[in-house]
Length: 263
Image (cartoon, rainbow, N blue to C red; front, top):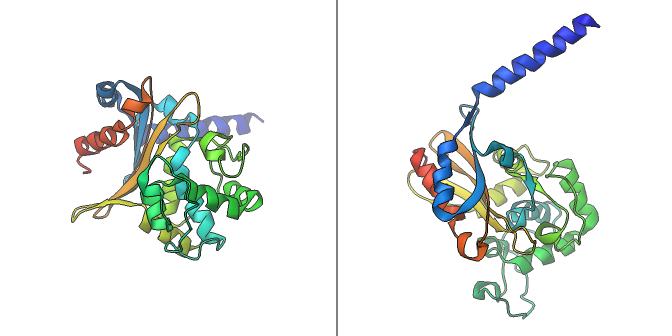
């Protein structure tokens, strides 16, 4: 028993040392959030160096509703189940006028993802159904794995929650083709995630804004491929004036990535 206890303590010590070697807290990133009057967090993972940078690490581990960042996972399930045969299959618009003009038309997954069309992904989730959705949520360990609140709104105002740290892990597995989906499915989703592409880098990303819950949160998650390097990021924030402030999700992220020389 004594030997076992010594072994456990030694393993815990080694784990602690390893974690400290690849984790750096960056309190100086607070200035970017303060500029817009936000509380928030940011985590960046450097794949080649297996290292993390984090601002507000306690919040990075806290789970929040994913809002439209769930479109990444919803797309994966829709393609894997054959609900959509590919990213170009069109869903007919239901003729309900919504506040964003680009939503008011027939859409395929490419444009539904680009315009973050809620109605398209609600219809996709309804066609997938609760049983299949729960199956893929569970085997891929997405957040708290709780899809209560309705199949077409659990990521908007229902029970699902995910942390910035968990967003990073999911994106890393997507990039490495380690999620429980076919390579074809993951490759298609990576393609529709392209947010910006230059001769120097490719940025794949998704925004999210939890507007239907009392404590609104904003997201910007994704990864940058730059030569042989890959950098995964997740930003989460809240604001006393979200209607004014959440446009800054991307600006804050870009400012940090530019400071780090990634963009």
